[in-house]
Length: 274
Image 1 (tube, one colour):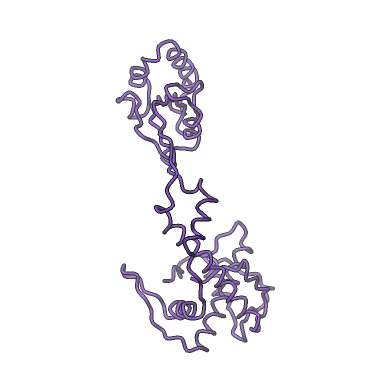
Image 2 (cartoon, helix red, strand yellow):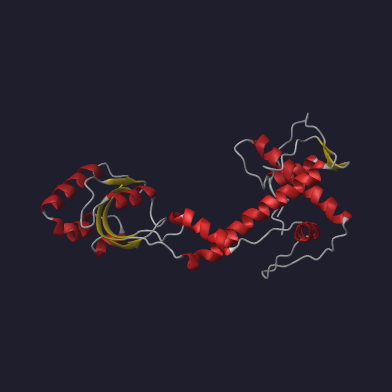
């Protein structure tokens, strides 16, 4: 299902650019310019190179699909999106010609044993904070004063949150509930990881929102996920990895016997046509 948009801006190609062709079929500059939007890069030239390589691979696969008379059977995804005829040809060719073995249980177990940190639930934190806005000059001094007060009277956290916090949680003693990965900014997460349970971070934690006085009430340690729970996910990941390697090898074989002009096609780094 193509995501190419004809309305997107098309970067200009260098006038001196060589003509690119596959077995005598030219890849036009207009096609390269349009495909470039699907290959974001820090430099326009890199994007054009990636787009050119992707179109060459696509042309290789389309030519082979037509040579083998692969049936054109466009599929739909159930949400109203339907493959183009060219997408159906490429998919049909890969399904017929590229064979990838499924990852067996032993291979999945080895991967699980060697990568246990990937298969672990994250730590969760129950925390409170007092937020002092970033755009107020008095915030640093106020933060220092609040920390000094809490060092003497930690039980006043709720009252200080209600009086000074710019966060809506100030009305509920600064409580943030359970916090997991990605639910707050990195600086705040890093501070939570450093605090001892029951303690207040010794310094204000600075984020783009301002200065935070942070107290950690509870840390719920993550746990290792058993193999049986993640076996399907591992098999899917390993299968996709093998599939991509097999497709690249197949493209390399096609490229080796094709007449490709204007580009050096490196199948190991060439973008795959899905």
